[in-house]
Length: 328
Image (cartoon, rainbow, N blue to C red; front, side, top):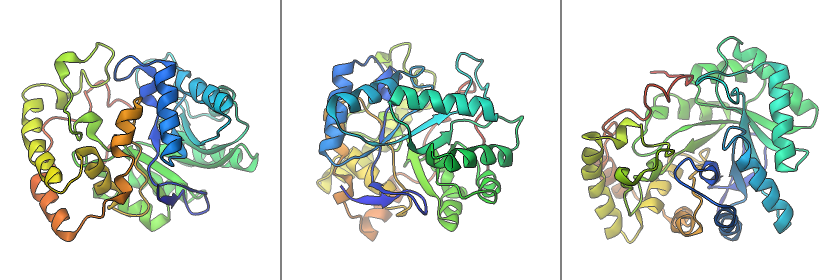
């Protein structure tokens, strides 16, 4: 596994991180044994960087990681997120100093650690200016609780405002071959400022894999069930378009998820994608993405097959997008 630097002054971490939302049933049932096997596979493939959040299973993902590290005697570099009001209405966030301190300390307790390399604001609290939130996070660094901080689902202008107060380590927004809005300023701003960009859902929530998910089999708890891209007629249209990409990468001797991740990695050395899975088998399918080196011809063909904006349907439902900072 190749490595990339986390922020300007952070550690070298695996070029691919593992997203741990799937451990808590967002895409279907999971269990401890399966999740532990997935973490074993991550470790064995050289993935040493995990991404989780307080809200994932209301702390369950963090607790599982903490238990794993204690059981296996192996410590990952961990990023987690806070700022949402647990049990609150959708879009209700609290970025006040006391609330963030409580959330951070709760995460550290569940993870069984006294230091976190990276701590994110999961969603903005619009009642508090981002400069004030940044000052709170900078205090956590001075206290030795975190190595750096970042924000999830914000705009380039908000990043610049925060970075003017204290260097931001990382930004986490959705980015993949079918979600390209960070190309409209965020990737460039991160590069300009020396901020790492961590794309979540880089495999299109399962669409950019050899086997396409079947929405008819989604459980009621599946996060994708109410997303427009997985509803008809959008879903069938997306399947038809992606099939051409799947055939192309097969002709190159690659599997689909590896090629999709390789494309993300190719967008800049300041990107560290965060594919999520609870399956050791699925992780093994894309863990070698770093080995793929795209040629100019590959890039041109991928752009032809999956042009910018090809995806039919919004990435979130109207309810899911509440609280997310949109731009462009």
